[in-house]
Picture: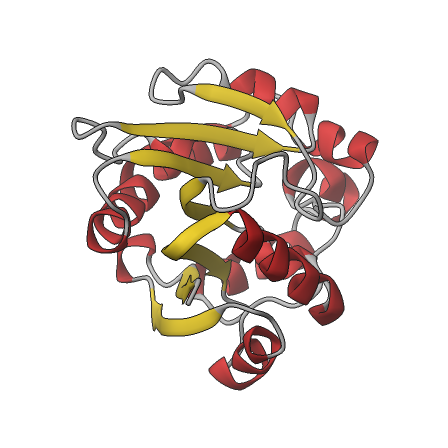
Length: 220
């Protein structure tokens, strides 16, 4: 993702604070439910599915695997992959770069990520989408839970950070880069049109309390 390997390794350290425990609970519960629903809607029952920018991998724990799905956590951060490897639902962990995915052409059945796409510039996103297009099977889908700038939780966290927690900001609300959170469909659609992917749908994620916009793309 945007930012150096070291900065993301700093971000992905085990957070035993109350905030860290709440965030982990939300990923395992509400976010996982919403991701599982989208996976059932768009992903085939069998194949390799890549969490492209997996972080801890906690949000994938409810994706159904009985039909032969294999879940791969891919991230730049060694710390993130170490934590993802502890999730029994994850079948493999791969250190890799979204700009050069370590998979063969047309070998991946589906791609998903959560809270990743907003960390890149529009030009970078076109490159990433084209790389996803390369590795996806024809007709394959990519599901992005794109952080919404004006979500209730996002505004609340920013207000808390600004008024209460500025002194320890790096611990509470730190990411190496947060460039273009989702605001409206128009700029996102413009980015996707410049890539080889096709925009299928965009809708607020009710299951994550509107933290994310669920943006779905397909390889034509």
